[in-house]
Image (cartoon, rainbow, N blue to C red; front, top):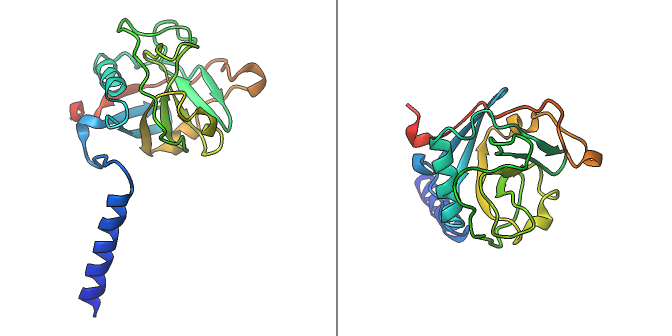
Length: 188
């Protein structure tokens, strides 16, 4: 009876994965980012199935070590932590790469979802991104900002990033920074 039960459980798990939506490789080092903070590692699964151009740009910038030292310049409790401005370090800069056409989807924003920051123009995302703190805080962003990844480990390290206040639009005085950000395939 036990082997039959194990087989049925395995079959049920496979069926649930098949129904879960687009497949995202669990162990794909080329589409995994290691973001190091002062308190530890954050592992990010990139979503080229949702935003291939945004994922390509993030990986290019990570390989250029663009994100090393980028501050978490805007952090609003219960909402999100924004980073990725290594040029001006205050949320007004991008990279030398061109801005991206939006790749909006109906993927829901949940705790740990990564989205691309942009100006009023939907086609202005470049290097800045945000990480959602909880399921409710970012729910209104669905279909308006490009989802390109999700935290799969280390979200507690994002929770520890120094916060600003909602009254000051989340601007952080003496912010924490990204120590390093690398594509897992490049990490020895």
